[in-house]
Length: 521
Image 1 (spheres, rainbow, N blue to C red):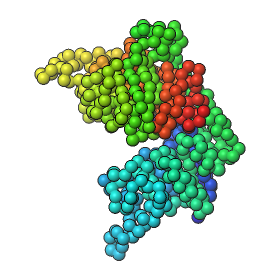
Image 2 (spheres, helix red, strand yellow):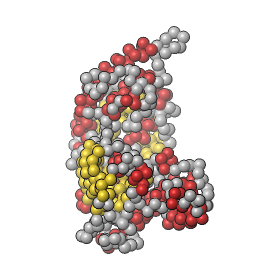
Image 3 (cartoon, rainbow, N blue to C red):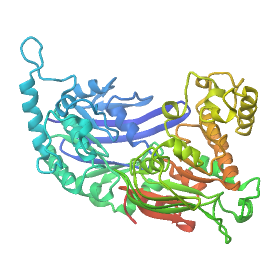
Image 4 (cartoon, one colour):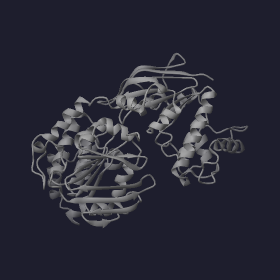
């Protein structure tokens, strides 16, 4: 079994957003190549291109020296390529065996599924991680009943069940404990000896140096470094990942220092030279206090937030950032204490959070934030109709919606047009606008500028500056490190469900943010 894969000058665009603009990667039989990069560098996009999930727009893939283009994961699997993605593809209502062998079940005579053979082969796979399970795992257990680490193991077993020549592990260790990680690395060593090749993506620097022979570093969609792992240090890799600031982000961020406006208990940003919400010598009151907040992902997060402050949440994706926002919004169960405006709260439903003045702008606006077939008016007023009475005061609703649309500079023909007709940036303004009509005291933002162009980002930054100066407390999770640095007074960097570092002032740099995201200093 041998394999040679080469991605050469790969380009991928999503509308006006360039995800990859010159990505290169080579992996050969019997080696592990670490694919490294900060948030938004293009690691997952390149992995999806190799695995046939998305099509490239430029460049080429060579498999065993010949051009290759996979139209689907099934086509890639037939060529011997399999991927363990960070976002699990398992079906909760199906059993372990059904998930592993879905569409590839061993068949008996007459095309009937050979249940006995399915069970035998599943048990052979489960034995690979024997001794590391927390439950008495069997082929017949529903996947939805399993803890996160065992779901991740099933995802790994599903990928290796096809006996691939090339295996892509995209953050495959994120949910595993130390015993399970070590077992996976033992298996990787075995697979290398069998002639397989592995592309390894991880947010843990120590894992990269433990398992990989070579590295490839992506930054802003471009390969900026590659070589032998034993010839570099963590500091070298962090320097490659951080690079220099993106010019577009610098220009957009400069907006925050323009057009000074009065802020409660704080000087205008232009006078202080600080981003909106950054505390002055006379600090505003504490609006939110969180102590030892734990979920199935978070392991004890504590912090305070002041009135008018824009607090950033950073770190590589999947480290608990969204768990934190959804716990504060009453959408995820948690333990620990939360005080809002000096009063203890423990929301168990989003309606409770909304009534208390908490608003959440979700990351997946098309799925979680909008009713695409309904009008702009209906979407803006979705959480607000109750305040217009049993007999809806429609004129007042139109007036209020029109005012918020104007303040957000929403580009539209009328409030009656379907929200699906708007651009991505304007659709995001509708998601934000519906909550601003509630006059919230705490605004939670889940990666709100993902996938929008630079001009739309600039408008959004202006809006954040105005809201922060007006005293609204904001927590912003962003997968764009430059955005966090430019916008926030402080950034809490989450790593493996904990606050690994709190960065502010001179310490709030790209290099420090990247290093903390990887669990290093």
